[in-house]
Image 1 (cartoon, each protein chain N blue to C red):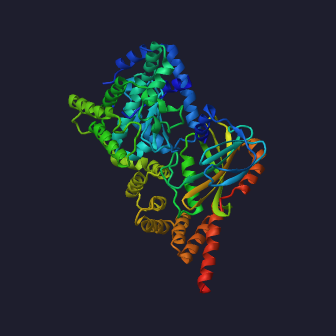
Image 2 (cartoon, rainbow over the protein chains, first blue to last red):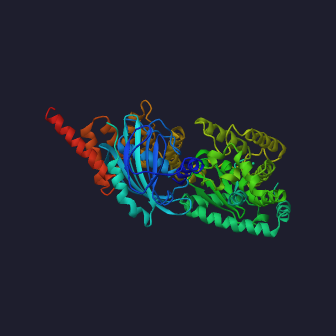
Image 3 (cartoon, rainbow over the protein chains, first blue to last red):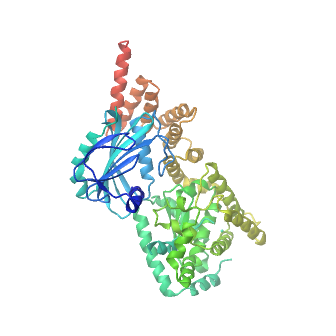
Length: 179
Length: 396
């Protein structure tokens, strides 16, 4: 997870700055749209949107659309369009559990969920990152056609996670696929 | 600086007589200040590793490994270092030793080697690194150049295994040590290690077979392992060097201990654990080989039968799902109280549209394990099964 942030933030420090954004956000490739809360900063690309208020090492919301054929960082497993939401969640958990920066992973919840009117899954898990910080993540995802969509909220377990959980729920509720 | 320190603390290898004279020569070559510093760092890193959640907790297996190590350690060197062995849940081929004698070996190695003589070859090589104070020598070599951190990091950056090994323990982990030993130190560890296994009565020909076997294993799925990869020409050199050493050694042709059956019995739990890890990694062929190897030892183990079914279901090649069903059913017949195969059998039936059968399987699963974390999914499947059966009954 931290590696993901690191990879994302390297180009950030070099070129494009964090920018303030409010209201409806549609990614450059228009795979999805979400409402970004007031006061949050964004960093994005064709396939993902990263937003944070206090800095991504304390809390962030990450929205991603990826082709089903795209490889994961740690597992060689792939998703496919015939997978049930539970099977897609298994792939995510496999990839996560192989990440050496994710230590003492505990899955607190793994359940079906409706996201953007699609059948998907929701995961709630905690872990310690490479610095020993206790982190909590709510991870929601679903497969639609040849794409996997995910929206996740990660924050320091103590104080920050609960503080912005409501905001995440509003962002999640606003997540839409184009008609 | 932290990277450089770790490079020197961790002594990795899977690469191949010692005597008190050699050891004392090695000890004399290092300053006590450096040695003390290395040992302190090692203790800290071991603590971090033990708290990381990566350790495979199996006291019986650790006792077995420590018996081998005790057997390998010459009586005259028993007071110098206290060796102990811990197993890491990691499917990659790797092993390393700290300067204080703490050896860490991955489940990936245990799962892929064939007998105790091969295991002893790996352990003896690691012991040789510690006995010969290779970490200390490496530290001093870099200190002498006055550019320790930069030089080591540059060397690591050029290592072809960087990406693979880097997975071991995050970017700062023991990974970096792979590139830290010079080839002359690796050769010395090979030589000393070979001497240790011969003195302990193991069959030294297994040392060469070990590398051939691991190379073959890692090539199966194009796995670029830390030490076993065609991108490392030194591996072939080392095999040749082993063969040369064996020719030169007068006891090398003597038949020695292999202990295949004991080895398989003692390591079979780690074998199954590694099959699970390989499955997570998506290395289906490796996972399949390991699960089948386990089942040859314990053919009626319901958990292994279920795992074999899972490997096939998740691989999903032609005929895999059909075969997976057979293994789930076998697992159920061996242990009807084990809920997992009911769930996965239900999933396969559900996806095949066999709603009546799927409903029964899911019900059995929930009956056996009512508070399972994925209960909400299963209840959803059951609702859908009932709905579809009702529609069928109504002729819709």
